[in-house]
Image 1 (cartoon, rainbow, N blue to C red):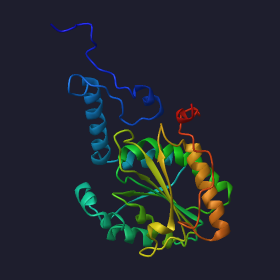
Image 2 (cartoon, one colour):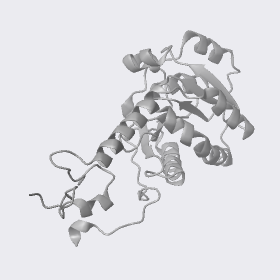
Image 3 (cartoon, rainbow, N blue to C red):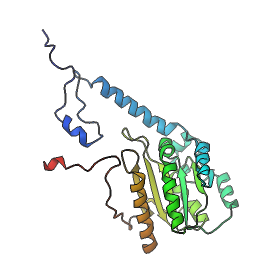
Image 4 (tube, rainbow, N blue to C red):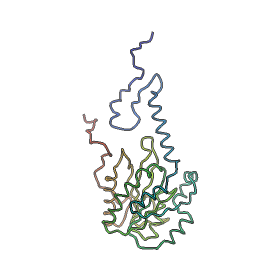
Length: 267
């Protein structure tokens, strides 16, 4: 005869460690299976990650909101004409389409200090949530530095390197690309920032870039990310380079909305 006083869900002995990480640990078990709640949470997280990749970014809405803030924008397209091609051909996402290149060449070739590019990347959700509020902090800081800026370029189906041709067109010292990062099961809306000094189309590589990643509600705050980016800009001005030879020496790395906790390993 079964003992009905026994709990249906058996707690994992690591349960107390869950407070230190969003990782899926100490889920417990119901018989030989995961508890229903853990299964449903996983399915929801998986669905949100798939949606972040597959649901198109509302570029028209983003452009309208930025314009209302007084930010001039110009929307371009990469050579990946749709999401299916974009996912299967990363190389095409790094290049502007022929019509986009023609549009770029027809713009007045002013000398600019920095270009800012926003690409949907692998998470439209990330750009939908974070691009507008981050730009509202970034653009005034660049203007305070006296930097000449062309319109903010919004690129459909863009990869990081798609900003190189835009920066080269303006002979810009700095290329700043905001892009949706590959979604994870705990962060479907993580935005990344890639910073390149003197970006050149077809020449600049990932080794020439600095990356600030994990910008979302439970990751880096906008203020923390901006602090890191401004540090990189200032150091690049001195060293005349970016990438592996430019180190981020900022120390404010406490995740957004989290308090500093003692290391449980030292207790």
